[in-house]
Image 1 (tube, rainbow, N blue to C red):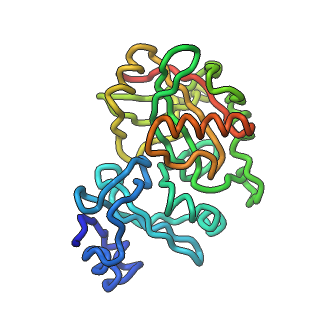
Image 2 (cartoon, rainbow, N blue to C red; image 1 turned 30 degrees about the vertical axis):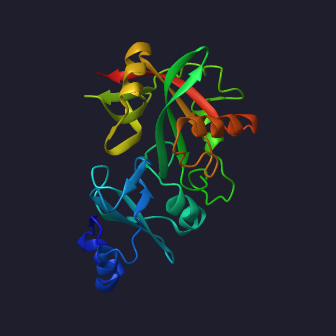
Length: 258
């Protein structure tokens, strides 16, 4: 069955006309996928879908995203990162770029989390691949260490609210998630630590919880820890496992925007 795919000229140039036509005809494109930007399910037979080609020095991986989230494009990625992220890109989805503490592809998922006896809006952040300290090539994954240096605290029990992160905030405007903002430095305006390629739609229940509390729990785990979970109960179970394994950090951030 033909697919509702967008294949940009730059992607077509990389994969060739023959493979592009096979994708459009449905011969080599999946019906269902996890969006590589917002990490929610997509269907190439029912909604416009972008082809996103991640290209390293020797490896290339074709992923799919809602056309409303990100346009069809070629994304250059360090070969080491791409090799380590192949499973995440093809099976778990991905996210947008984080400008601090280093350039990385992050998957960001919104969901509701029960903590301290109440339901809270949360963002779960997970890189596509291992994160090395800036200026090094790894291979040690220091994602959690970098976040702790930024003020995030270890989460050993998801039922306990993480502490406030001074200067950090979550930008939501017109009911859509735009960015996670880090503290201003030296009098400069707050900068985006993570920014959506396009404003991300969030569930009505998530928005309602945010309007009630005015703050968001931001929970972060290393690559391959959480994955794309189709239901919030499965997401919570993955978070509980990460916390028990010492692989979860978090912080509470106020709302920036309306």
